[in-house]
Image (cartoon, rainbow, N blue to C red):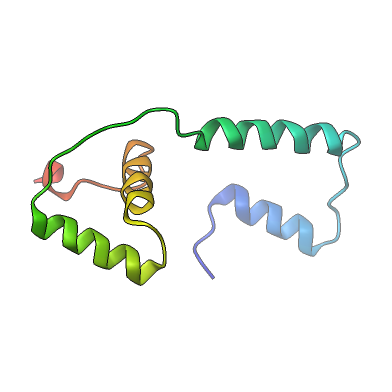
Length: 93
């Protein structure tokens, strides 16, 4: 199991104790979450970049290994980076 943060541990504890209760506005909340997710992952902009053919081949191989298109892999990596989920090792030197 992956490491849980403090909030996740608290949720898990309450769940295991059987004290979680359904929200009274569950349908409304589900619709709100769907709208947020759609807005978050909406791809409405294009970019063109130049890469070395070696890097492109490596990206394509990695994507093939993951079972996804290489453009999806690139988009995912960029998204994770801007969200602070990937750390630039060079920036810390």
